[in-house]
Length: 215
Image 1 (cartoon, helix red, strand yellow):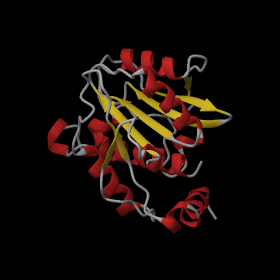
Image 2: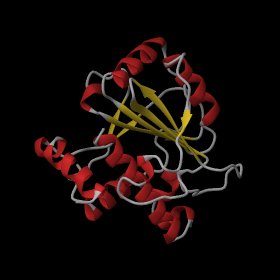
Image 3: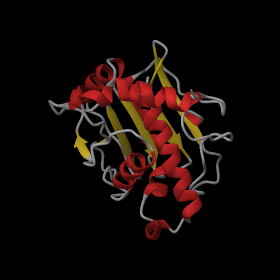
Image 4: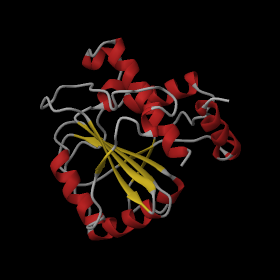
């Protein structure tokens, strides 16, 4: 049995037996467009459903950190271009959420970086972002990315980085920087990235989902 089949088997035997897995977009304050790339998550959800045996809820959920049902959404996706600001209450609740089993994938859509790092430093003052090496399981748990995180948009021309925060050995947050997977997930006619980058972005997104849900 391949590692791919083992991972999917674990998913089916655990979470998938009870309910469909779902992705939740994080709504934040500060002025940034948390709602950016409207076709991205529907396309990723559809791709995962069609190309794996993972049962995905086809609805894109949305939640604020202060919402009472936050803990019903274990996989949060966050993106945008502008400023992010967490209140004192949000900092405390977000810390508890992430250290209690929740997972965050933050995807810089260009312009998010400075404020996102600042606010996450409030959430975890003592934790540091760790760049994942190319041989990390995230890059080969389903699709193979021997060169690591794919580059979808040029932005500042820097190499893409997959940065992670860990708690007691478990990855609790993934920050994809200088890659812009969300733009790659969008409908092809939106950014004109071409089918190759579109497919690469969707495959990487699938890996992230599988890795996060099988932790």
